Image (cartoon, rainbow, N blue to C red):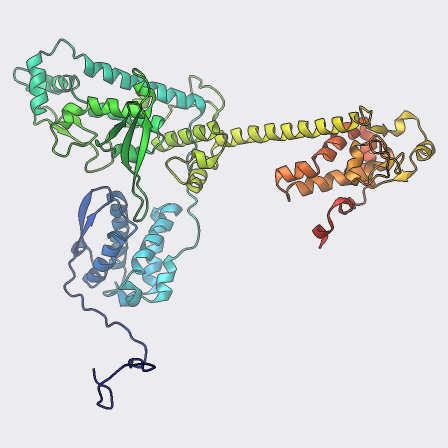
Length: 600
């Protein structure tokens, strides 16, 4: 390196190396050699290739290829084949919308506000608000990637960054009766599958069974053409799991494990049995973005004969029942089943979820076969003959499992969160669910009742220690004149009167207790004159309830509130209480019993 003066640049003590003046910026790389074929390998092992060259507007192809490669690459947020395919559909629609405009933008730099407005109108005319919001966010992520960040103006890219939340309504879980109905039907079918594979029917000889086990194909020699489908299916059912078995198997797996159906479909065959009581399985938890995809779970095996009631027992049972089909596959996946090919072969044994997580089997047909019916009223009434058929939704089924586990653990979310984080468990599975709300309301009602009973017991014990059973309440209806009351209770407190302020019933000394303690004191006297202030105090205590934690409120104000509600007000007539309500002034005098720092 040479300096402007021609001398060799040197460094030394207090002589740093010379740096170029101005701000350094990396020169833009020429990317004419960018491939328009973007490969994708997901975290779930599935792969595909996106051909950008098939899109319209050739001037957009190279930037699209670079940006899309970043979106679906190892550091991108699209890490499954289904999510990448969905995002690609949005990109294709965006490019086609631009190409269909009156003056299509040949290059990204030609993009104008009118093009984006036309795209937005097209979306709003054909999609629901949730899909519109999803499409806008996908395009915003695409355009914020280089090189679009330099080719498209910031004000145009900002139009896609719509602020707002996805208000998609989550379906409620099943009622207790509906959940039991689904699980019972699924368990019955799986038990029938176990018995079917354990004892083949005598109709088929051993040679036919052995040939099927070796090849996975059913011979149809001598079988009438129209009967071949039934013949091949009935023979295959004696050896293999078939497509018709998938729905009850998936339903029972979700119900016993509490994991979503996507994770169940990608169960691995590798596992480790721990001392015969549990099985350790590495599972794939599908998440957005990179990282934290793989984890290991430990499932209880249970007792012999109870395999259909424990997650580990069900896993090992199906692993054993699908072993004949798995032996015919090179990959040796957990899910292995026989798949026919119509009236003519060849038959094949396959992993039904190797290419896609779609089962290609109707949940509705399975529910109709078992005559599953929804409740007449949500989560309350048993079904009537005219109620609609109960639909099987795996998301609702998992939510029902999460709700029941949360209830069983007393609502402690950190313990209940098994397959999701606590915020995800609450916002996506518990919040808004009718069964959760009913249970929480009953729990809160019981908790309030327990706290109220505890406060009332404390009030009674305090009075009993002073030799009284009830407070000295003197309504005007008892005939005592106000003058007589004043003669016996001359000392006024905040909300009551005191018979002898100088001698506390327990200590015999001058009273130094809070005015709230007057509601548990044998010296306290309450007349109709005190009613307006007592009603104001109740209102103030109710307002303070929403400002303090529940336990703090009950500890500080609960005994006094309970004494007023249950020992004072019931001794007055409705007319007296109504008249006192009209005399309230709005000053509850609550500051007389609060610490001084609370008023700063």
